[in-house]
Image (cartoon, rainbow, N blue to C red):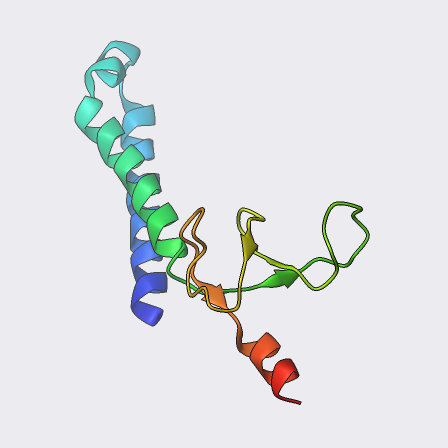
Length: 107
């Protein structure tokens, strides 16, 4: 997990570095600096993918919706319904943390 968080920080630093370089270029040169622009875009994509590997706590509907029954779980990233068998959200790929729910269900 620490490797993932460290990698995200390195990628964020790379984005800042490349954006500063791009901002310092004259407008015509900036338009031709596709390599730097592509690196920035790739870093954003990589950060998004890495962040999905960090487990997020599953949410539970509170029963206030007339369409969704209380006790149904959903992904904290995309709000898609998930079941306790899911390690990752089948809709967005977010890693799911069931630790608190497993403890409650064992009691």
